[in-house]
Length: 342
Image 1 (cartoon, rainbow, N blue to C red):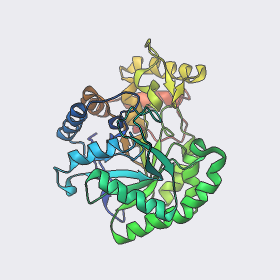
Image 2: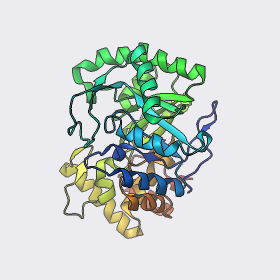
Image 3: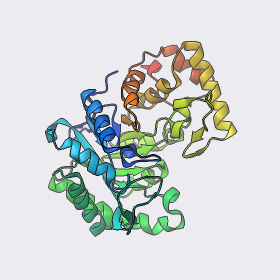
């Protein structure tokens, strides 16, 4: 495979995405600080390695990731890359710099959820200012869903599907953005959103991976019917599909300590990887892109070594029999497309 592809995210709009993208959460100092010079080196190395799809969000370091990515991309022509960011969180002065929401950021802001028409418009304009750019290609409403909002989600979802959706649709009609969707960790909220409008794409984190394919029962086929593409984030399910189980480090799945059932399944996958001499991380990174609804995969890249590693894993030659074996052993569902099927 190649990290560049000819598959458009939306056929009627001809917005083309590389099959491997750059996830910008680590540049917001997710879980650990990254110095400005190191962040710059990450972006330069990614660019020189032909990464051209960059995803960020106001939430990532309370604006830090957007600032860093914008400062870097400003030296390049807007036609050379695809940039996505998100709306739904406004940044408000918080009076101090501290560790917030998992980010060790020097930015003295905190978040306020707002999925209204005016809130989305303001968020879009604020992102342009932080990026220092005059274009954003894809705009996602960020983290709508019960996982984030609990009992408040019903009201916020209605706000998002009425006011927020109208704002995104207006920006697309004006040609200010090329595509829009949701950026979430729950496929169910994307499926609900399909009843409310014409979405171009969904950035779905961790919900179609080697460890879980429930989204393919109904949701992904609906996306194909609606010409709505999936950009898959979190292909390693918070790390366990990258590290495997043979490590002294804590094992995480879906942002929490992995259960025994998850660990046991990963051990089964590792045994098959050993048999065919396939790195587990390569299988995890390649698996989602076999689905025709998935046009791009974007792992978070917070270290220089991970850039070339990700390219090597994505291009690793995995024998078709490997894919057939994990299906025969019931580790992926019968209906999940595999490269061995092609």
